[in-house]
Length: 451
Image 1 (cartoon, rainbow, N blue to C red):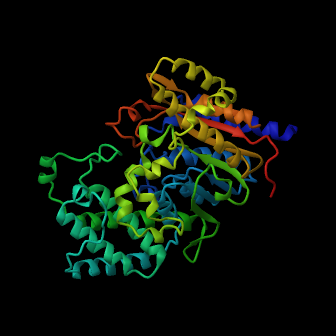
Image 2 (cartoon, one colour; image 1 turned 180 degrees about the vertical axis):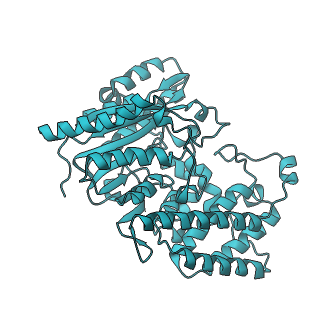
Image 3 (cartoon, rainbow, N blue to C red; image 1 turned 60 degrees about the vertical axis):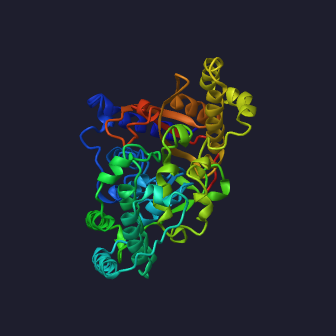
């Protein structure tokens, strides 16, 4: 270990901790937790705070000028990608959720506000001229989740989007449609799980998806123009295209083949537990994805992702619980903190242990493929939160730290933050326990892939 890298570790730690010394609540971002620019296109579950990410990433980039690329193996709504672009960095992300990939690819540009606004006007004209009542979506539960008028209007919007020739514009419009579906379905918006409203509530709702679509479209066009202006001001656009490389791929962090290349910097926030019992990202995406042409998202996206409301979540960490108990011995060895948790769960119903084991097994298995994509001495930022299972707290920060140290990485520092407004499911008894997060800052001290 060279003296220079130890000096950089110390400088980075000092810069991060100085913020907390000046203001102990600095990393909470209570006064600046809102979303601006392309980060506000769609209300994705549990999105990270852009201002916090910008601060963290800026400190690393300023401390380590050789950082040119960012990797996010759990890309979610693409917040890391947007902040990486604002800093002029290359960015590559991976996610198992097709909606996450749509959001990320939409946010990648190109940024041609005048052209997109003209296309939007043409799109609205096509919708207005459509007199058909043909339903464009066909799936089990359609009539349960959508009122007849809502189905007809969503179908008009879908047909209109299909008339747009440019894929980048279609993706932008698909995102607007996704937000429209989220707001106009019969599922409650107070939870990310599919939860049907009462018959009385549904009857009382007088919705026009076309009006909602127009409103969201107008707002997103303003956000799009603001994002374009920000990038232009920083000389990061050439003919409306971002000058660096940016992409997101549909795949799993556990699969080494889902990512190619080597990166200077990792910034990510993995799930805090299996999606089904924490934040059901896939379930929340189920209805919107039924109204979007999956082929416009990714060549690998198919109807298999929509075989059930739990299919996407089943592909995420901890989604497959089969043989989870077989991993207990190895997991105990990999994390002393996890071993203590398993002891505390011994007297609880066995499914609690299975749930934790399945998630921690998959998280552990993802570490090696993720680190293999980082150059030696690349810095990492992991934003994680804790949950409770069987009344016991699952301290993910400690468990993940154990995994990372065992894999040959070095801890630089760990920061704590309260969650003032992170979009969680307020009626989810599991998610409501997630009030704090830890920001783990590590360095890939092991011999990684070389560029």
